[in-house]
Image (cartoon, rainbow, N blue to C red):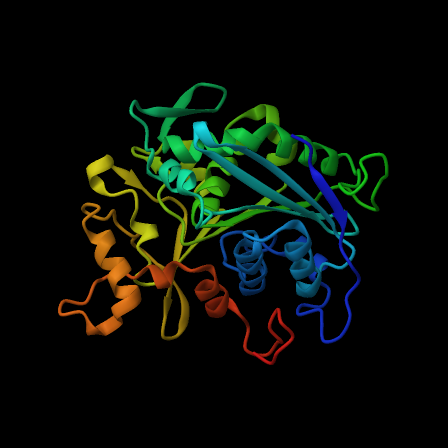
Length: 336
């Protein structure tokens, strides 16, 4: 596994979308750790959406968002027979103070990726927390994909903590890592949540975990089963899950595969914008709702019995549009 590294370009008009973004990210969640930040949500949601692209494309988007001359690292591992399709992007600000880790979601054209999403585990899969003192049951397919790139991503974060450049590990940056953000859409969101649990649940990684500001996910499926140990509840204050109504993925896996649940703070899209929800999305009763979710994508309201779900509402561009600020240009440079 050889990371792919590059240095982002400089900004040019009409960008950046967010001026002084590195300073904004470095300061976010310090005074109000439990409060959702709209700028952070837009940046991480856009990053998560473009993580399906190659390194050059997603790096260009991060430059446009407001991180010029960043270090971009792609860590990936694919093992078809093992249903492993794991890709993580790391973005280090030019100053070194901020690092974003973004996990790619399910790739639409990869059948094996979809099969891995459905693999909750023939036998329960457990994640050890607090140096083995506690365990929590996790989704086997999601956990396997996180583990595939775990050590490589961890090494990059250790280098950032040491003040080294992720574009060239032999060189240094102005400041060591201060603010770490984890994000992802769909499967990528579940991977981000599990990565955070693995990071914060073991004291050996405290030097990195102490720098974790927040986890922002978008259309994330459930990754853990109850009951939730104390370590999960503590981390939950740093997790901000975004759910668009009628997105079926947030209700997966269905209850027929076992009792899974969400953790963290949930924000649902409503008429007034993103609203904090006191109750989390519940599991779908069974997979029988999925075919109608696909029909709703093509037939819309013409269905005799409208489906409560539509796969169109899971698309990353749907989330990006809902997160986009109205007073800034889009990632394409057009007026929002």
